Length: 215
Image (cartoon, helix red, strand yellow):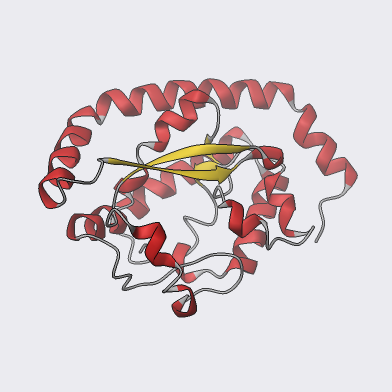
């Protein structure tokens, strides 16, 4: 279902919600980076020990609100030439639509498998939240090549800031196809509120310690 004009107007005009959401984003990202700084150091060492030549962090161009592109940060979980090797794996894609997912992706390192399984690789996105490119909660930020395949319907998920976590991530994640992900994102956009955001954050914490759906 397309978002109607009233919903679109509400997305832009809920100033009190947007201000409170930004306050939560800033506070949450700063607290997260401080509390998790020791974990960041441990992961940096482990990543370097397995692959000394590659960087600790991986940056990738993503598409945010209203189609604006930005660099998203992650802990590197793949070999250094992962992007170059992708073209040889596209036919092995295990999800439908404009995404690439492969359960036994040969590009993933040993430490990479662990941090992906626990979603720890996503933690550097707290920097993106602090910068304002992302929010703690919102739709998954797509790659430009994915957006190139979007229909006008799919592009509705770009009406709001992308998030570190969202309704898709706590609803099955890699087991959810692209079309279902879009529907979940549109449900979030219609229903979003501070209380709804906190519910998703709480569910995300539970997923981090027990998910079998991330890869």
